[in-house]
Length: 296
Image (cartoon, rainbow, N blue to C red; front, side, top):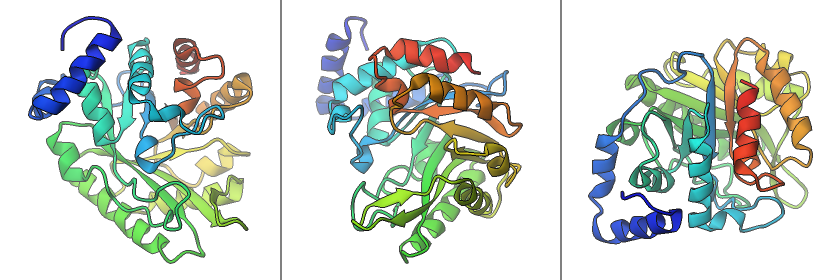
């Protein structure tokens, strides 16, 4: 793709999408891959951008903040350009946009796999694999796959999600690719909304369940939120883990402090953060990313 303003590059991207679909595979084949996923420091700083495919578009009180694809891509490109940022996590549409924009060389690229549990849906716990599968991730030259696992003991659909995640972990391991599992214990509130239980006990149980998925855990990483007594949560497994960001924090300084404390734990190896970095309260994407990178 030619150099120019982001508006010009985006216009070219849209034209390529309509007239040259084969350009996606060509861009994937050209991409320069990193020699090792964690890199020489053993730490990872990944920008998460897989929210739209689940219909989760809200940020900073705006219910459609992430619905503007040009704005989202520009924010991701800014984040990826900052020193210390290792890569990105996204669904095929986002990853392919970034491939066509030419910003993924020497970056860790993780494909988001199960996006079928749409936000707010009655079937949200039945989180089917509607995006990447392991073979597609390997064929595209990506570095691993990520899956969301919400365990609702009152919803029979959880069993299908558990089975799907176990199969994905095994399949990714068969390709010697990272399987990143984001586990929660979840429950339905009185109004029917599925919410994650963010307690020490619930997250310890979620980590234990996720660690046992698949025929091998050799390539499994965990993606976990920061909760009280993180040392107890992380003691539930020997697997490497990254911290997730969640909603845009009301107090960014408090969030940074919590991440810094959890990063001191031996199995915690980095951050995978989306809205908190892409839509910070002051709208300074570069500043938010740089502050997070400094923690590593």
